[in-house]
Image (cartoon, rainbow, N blue to C red; front, side, top):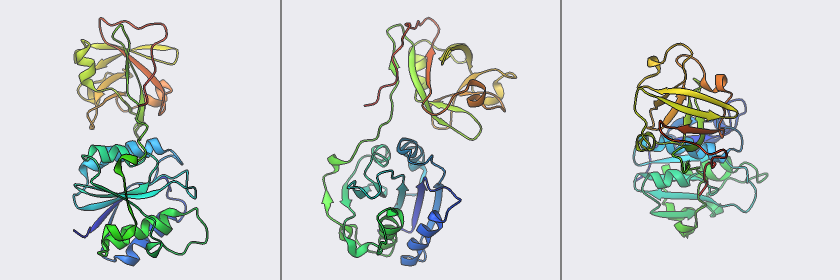
Length: 284
């Protein structure tokens, strides 16, 4: 099936012309292609942040399209650029761990092609803008009806670089040591902790849970909505992606608690205890 839409994510930002140029290249090959901007505000070079944003998004994207993801600190090196075919469509980007979590979310790779056929690249004055010169043309050619197999050689899907997505660690006393995965524009801090893990350790909705970060020990009540929080009360909510988030009603929990992406946060459910040096998040 020829894709009719492309979902585009990058760390290009909106100040420079990079996003507009990539879109123009795609449309030059496929004028009827519809392009959805997921975000272009991934922190520069932050592959992990890009991978997490992508994995949050892909389950909601229309089937049969392409996804173009560009967070590529290794641009110009020997890292591969790939197109990964999954049941719902094709994901294109650098093979640096950016695509791997989303590919897993979508059921795994059915085929992986290394985008090495220069017949489908733009002439390049330098090697540092692969989004424009290799990836955007690949999207445009696919949308114009070129077969995926024409863009390069098929490679072993098992060789894809895995994503570095952190997992929480469970202390012997029942505490859960995690980290902040994402801070949204409202200052809510999404943790890499599933609420079912809290329930399994005795936490109950409506009751307080001890929260530790930095040198602080706070109490946060597990509530259903942001509006359930009292003024200036730190709370835990299950966010729209099904993970546990620290929040304040109409305030930034990140600013109030001095938290950022990657900050260590330990949750201590009622009846649990924490050692003096709880384990940090695991990176498989």
